[in-house]
Amino acid sequence: MLKTESYIEITPRSVMLNGQAITVQETGDKMLVELYRRYAGDYPKFFKMDTLSRLGWIAAEILLKQSAISNQISAIILANRSASIKNDTDYLATISDGNYYPSPALFVYTLPNIVTGEIAIRHQIQGETSFYILDHPEQLEPIILSTLNSKLSTILAGWCECSAKDEFYAKIQIWNN
Image (cartoon, rainbow, N blue to C red):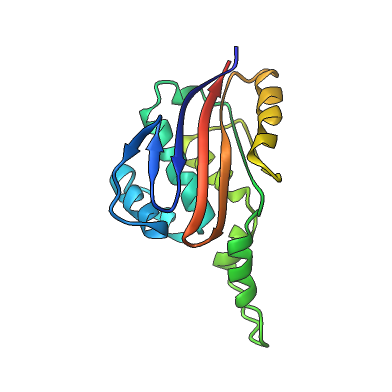
């Protein structure tokens, strides 16, 4: 039977872990840095990441650290409706107005699936990683169901949206059957 083992929900002003509020002092992107320092602190690459990757990465970090079955994760599936629009816009600014000096550091994050790769690297998850562009979070559930009905039994999946540095939402869950 399909069930959610645990979940985390992050907005620019709040963090909920399995329905319990995590106290934060900061808001927006500064809150993500606060959470990183509290729950990780040992992955300097975090500071090179774009906001979408920071959001998904820290959500997974907190969620997986508290889960008894985190070592059983066999796939990562995330989705949103705007892909990597915030970083795409930042990258475009480096090549506009006749100043063609594109930023390689920004370019790598013009792909929304980078966040799934960052999570997989950190947690040594060697299974499938996918990032879907969908209109609504509800559209992700059939993808999760079909993945769990295959040979996979435990996955990290959810919605990870970032439209601006301080405008984001993530709800990521550990699903198993």
